[in-house]
Image (cartoon, rainbow, N blue to C red; front, top):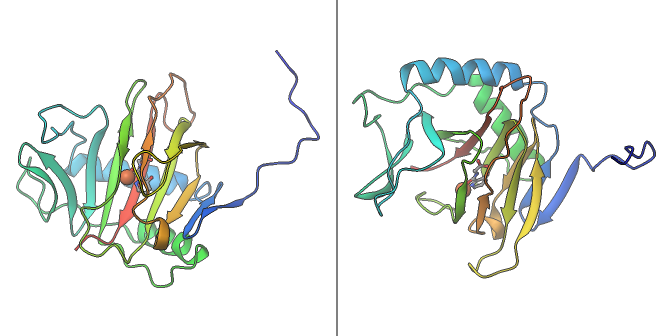
Length: 215
Ligand code: MD6
Ligand code: FE
């Protein structure tokens, strides 16, 4: 195997992807233990589940939510709901540290005063993937989205406004944050099937937090 090049420059800490989209490498690394503890507490109240798409297929990514709203899907469609359909209870509150991290990342990307009302929590195990999609179930697409990657690395596909636009592949690692809005808010994106591996913080899984203003 080739030796790592000790003199290769490190990847840039902030990489603009296009107008309104910024990759902040390692931005959440220090907060990761607190985020993972928060996720564990949320999952005790609102367990991860494999929801069914309107087409009738169970998603390979397991999901739960915190905040005033949670993203859900079933045979009736995709939407945001104020209660967990599995328990009938309100979603767990969004921890203050989650909100603060999302606001700080949004501010870095030029979106002042981001007020997320939902955080979708995605759990990937090897083989789990997310097909190319747009995030358009939110009432107001004026607000950005902040996405935090934890644990095993994943390949993120990043396209454009049109479904057929060229796709870029980004390696997202533990602590990486994407902040994305404005002209990029409705860009297509997806996650390729997770490769097997072990990460000290999450074991054999990748976790993703996606903060949005949905209501
Ligand atoms: C994921 N993320 O990274 C899935 N959507 O696991 C998303 O679908 C996503 O990361 C909108 C903006 C950022 C994202
Ligand atoms: Fe998305």
